[in-house]
Amino acid sequence: MAIETATRGPYSNGVRRKAEIIDAAVRVFGSKGYGGSTLKEIADEVGVTTAAILRYFSKEELLTEVLKYWDNHQPDILGIAGGLSFFRGFRELMFFHLENRGFLELFLTFITEATDPDHPAHQFLIERHARAIADMRSQLIAAIELNEIPAMSTQMLDYESSAFCAMVDGLEIQWLLDPAFDLVGFVTTSIEQAIERWQGR
Amino acid sequence: MAIETATRGPYSNGVRRKAEIIDAAVRVFGSKGYGGSTLKEIADEVGVTTAAILRYFSKEELLTEVLKYWDNHQPDILGIAGGLSFFRGFRELMFFHLENRGFLELFLTFITEATDPDHPAHQFLIERHARAIADMRSQLIAAIELNEIPAMSTQMLDYESSAFCAMVDGLEIQWLLDPAFDLVGFVTTSIEQAIERWQGR
DNA sequence: GTCTATAAATAGATAGAC
DNA sequence: GTCTATCTATTTATAGAC
Image (tube, rainbow over all chains, first blue to last red; front, side, top):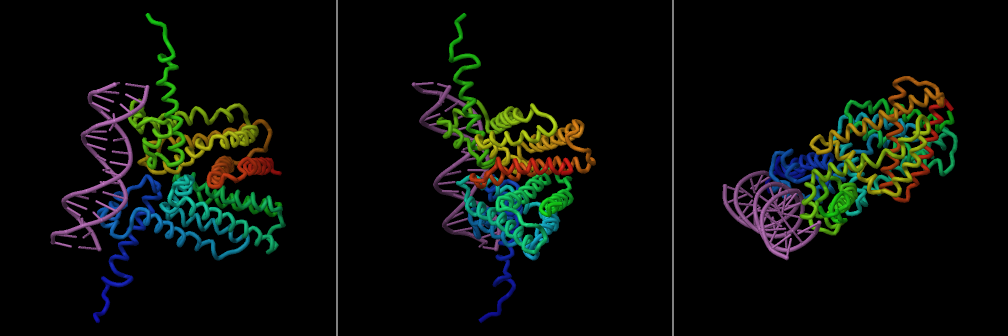
């Protein structure tokens, strides 16, 4: 039996090309949305033809891969800390987003696009967003149990977790519209204001 | 000279049909974006063929009409009040959005879609959004001059006007993703929290 | 004023040569 | 593993019948 070379196995050209295609799809879907994007635009970014892409993925399979890519990259930064540190960690997440603009474009474009029940990623993205807010709620409860902040009503837990998520989303939109916008500074201020509010000043 | 009938002049069928088409375009562009929408979808909503639409508008002209429609309907509610009343007026604006879901979908979809410099409405929407934040800054200054709140630094004026806009945008996104979301309640709470913060508690 | 028919361009996808 | 060629469906847009 012949020894495997670099052109076979998990490190073959095919695997590398697949990653290149997914990477290009993240950028193109991110800036034009799923419906507004074409395979040719993605193919041009990679430097191949649409046929080369379709050897690996249909357009909808490519969307699935992009969503997987998103899920694998997003939560790493926030996963470590608990309680208030979790919320302060959003500052670091903004640095990540500054250097991965396509990633954030993808996120926000999909979130709005997926409002349409006919969108292939509709259910996935709604659940993803609901989970993100549920995570914030859990971390707010953790902060209370760690005695970092006093207890609050369940209504306020609902509000504060949604509001924190809304503020970050909204500030990110403004940075996308105006790249000169001080995303890190403004998010940092809003985190500290939220914590002050939770602490009852 | 013959007397004008209902089939001629500014109240002719053509004018009515034009309004129907723009109305349908607001909904379809709103839920699928500009790039993701087709003239056929809009035509089906109206109950005509694509040819009937193209008698009046090209696809890009239709986008222009939709943006005009947006500009003419949005600011009425907020235009009356000044100072803190301006910000409290956002509560009423939410009631309007609850009953005009397509309108809000249009707004948010375009805002994210227009992140792409190739989008036909790119410049228009960036300027529109910048003006919205500038308006909030002016109203914050008005509130200071009306002695409703103490003065704040120019940096804080920048931050607070952006943050207010971000919060409303973010909460609206959550309502679009989950129609059961208590948009009016949460926006009201965030307005009151912002005012408390501005008043120095 | 709207339709049918059709044009021209572009979309996603497949087959087969190299 | 990628390309060219091709297919089918769809999209924007036009022309002409009614």
